[in-house]
Image (cartoon, rainbow, N blue to C red; front, side, top):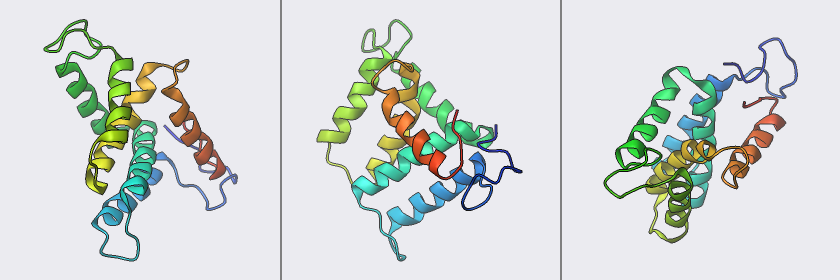
Length: 152
């Protein structure tokens, strides 16, 4: 899946593509969390970059879809959306709210925030377009549109 056609001149930096965007954001996330270079991502910034990266993974597909599969399998193992599991019936809305609560109250460092926000970037859109959980993904889509890239 392409974010923008390679021949379209709409991007201010040239054609990036969904895979390119995923690579760029992953490199920024990894080296920013390590923080030994010029850029050190704080917890909040690491979470933000991770959410952007997770959104790019979903759009890029290919090898990037493995992250989405791992998250979906993890939720299925806990019984989310399956009608019953070890914790009873848990809907995707409950899982989404749990992620938000963890973001707000858990003691996070940049690494934990990155994983939590990557999971949220994949989980929240699963709640559906009419839910409040779709809003962050729509905002990310608008941000990517500024670069000339389109996330579907």
